[in-house]
Length: 119
Image (cartoon, rainbow, N blue to C red; front, top):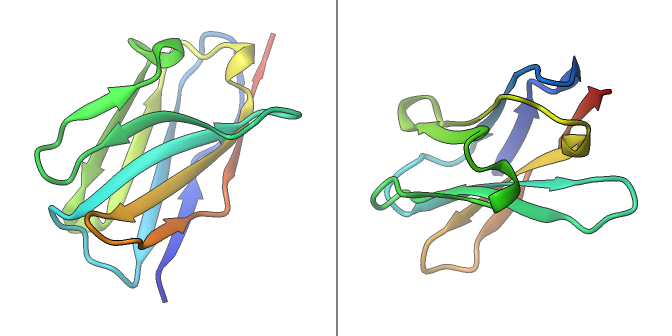
C-alpha cells in the first residue's frame, strides 16, 4: 500500500521559514513519478502551489509563492520537500503532498500538515 506522510508544519511569525517534507512508502521514486504540493486554507478550495517533474526535474509554482517557495526531491530517500521562506499570514493552510504516476491513473495524497503564520 502506498502511503505519503507530510511533516514539518508548525507555527511561525511573518517573515519566517519552514521546510515541509513528504515521505513516500510502498513506491520507488523514478522518472515516472511527478509530485505536487497543494494547500487548503479555511473556507477555501484546495490549491496547487508547486510541482516537480520526475522526467526532467522541471518545476512550476503559482505566482503567489514564486521567489519564496522552492520544491525539490531526493529520489534516494523517497522524499519531496517544500522550502518556504518569507512566510505571510495568507500562507496559513493545511499543506498536502500529491503524487502521480505518469501515464497512469494512479494518484496518492498525504494526510496534510498544518502551517500557521502569525501577524
